[in-house]
Image (tube, rainbow, N blue to C red; front, side, top):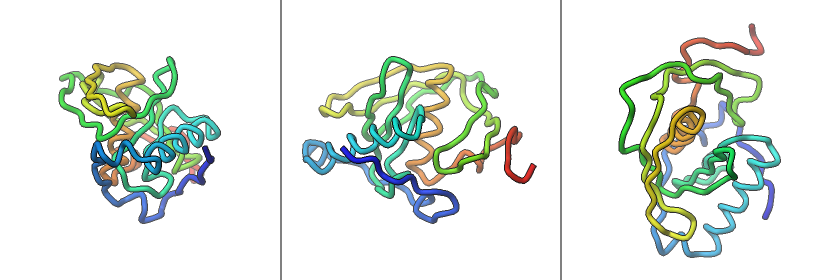
Length: 158
């Protein structure tokens, strides 16, 4: 495993959409090493989530730590959303250091993905987990949380 440098905004790399990972590719050492690198980078950077584009790889892979340990999610897709939305936590991003704000997000989401072994999984997450999944899946589509901020809470220019 290798800690990878986190790509910082305003790099155009962060704005490119990511490609799905096939089951065949998921089984390769290249993708398994990428997952390990993401896990290590997130740990070193003290994050609760990271997406492959944040280390310059445009594959639909995210890591989310729900408090029970960090897990990899491949080709994650939100397939259900709560009607209730709001500001649930102050968001920040490893790729945008020093900037924090509130984003209107769904209170709960239902996510379908593959785990690192290639098994199909479906999760229902709420609270912090819901915010992290929405934030990281946005990264896979080239969207940054600053595109959606309703209110900045901390900003170097403030």
